[in-house]
Length: 417
Image 1 (tube, rainbow, N blue to C red):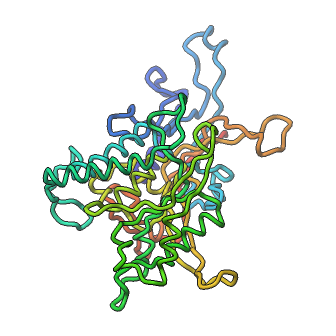
Image 2 (tube, rainbow, N blue to C red):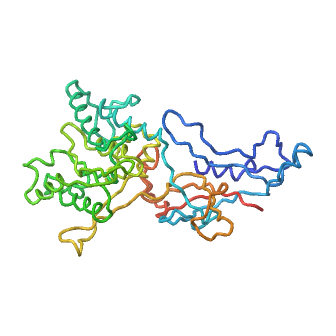
Image 3 (tube, rainbow, N blue to C red):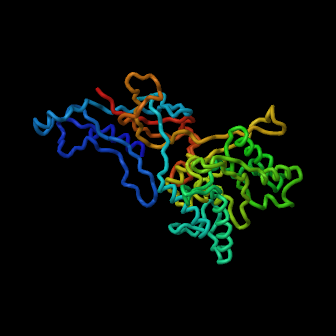
């Protein structure tokens, strides 16, 4: 696909000249996808794909007086361009100084993901998923019996009620939800590096608490911990972990309510019921809380990935909202605590996109006074070592020796000559 795009810009078709038949040529031809469809995909403007090699003469002298001549231009193509991953600014090549932007989901795409997740929970599948298998290596689908359906629906409605804000008013939307900053997949954190022969059957409660306390105390975020109720059975919780569990159950957080009317009280813990999958709950909480909510998990979510037929908007949601974690050295200031190492999503998206040039306002040297003006470079991300789940099949891993370790781009920019 990359070479196909580059081949176009290297061809004569990408340049308009005075000798070409301008009656059919379109100087504003753009790489732009078809209108948004029912799949909820997000349209992304990819900008012009033709430039002027010389002024194109007008059809008449009267038109010529009104039409401004186009500047002479050509396409410059730079390969292997480096980027500052902290800022998203390209460091080399023809697009040096331009910033790669985040590619966000449309509201329709977001709403459809919520509907899909609920369909998986309540029906065991989505209507368009015709395979007999669940996906994610979990075998064939299990047909949900009537009794199981009613039980699941009851527990799910309880969870939806839990997510509703306690503050209500005439301005509060019926679709409003509590605003958690961070959702924690408790089981994924608790079983991290605990897959060895002599490992206990219970989760590492202390390990989960390190992540919880980091976000509450260090980052001052509101946290929702999702963990299955079996992890709270008296036969499961060791004596040393009981104070931690009691702390989770009693902890309350406060945040500004909707429209700043009054403070909202948020519980820290939600115990998912028997017969239900934790993943349904933390994924749904992250979706309904909105675009500013992040999820702490190393789970690649292949179950949901395949249930949703690997749609682009699900992959985009993952790359913009998932925090990966590990644990570093023991803290020198906090007893018996390892320091969480968190890998946040990039502030930009590694997606093909057309950048906007930043032009400083006249008479201002302040970067805050910069404004977007005109089409910048078309940037195309190249594979790097460790790339996984970046493509539609959800299984691609870039690990051959020819793949570089660092993030690089092909940049294509129209320049004046």
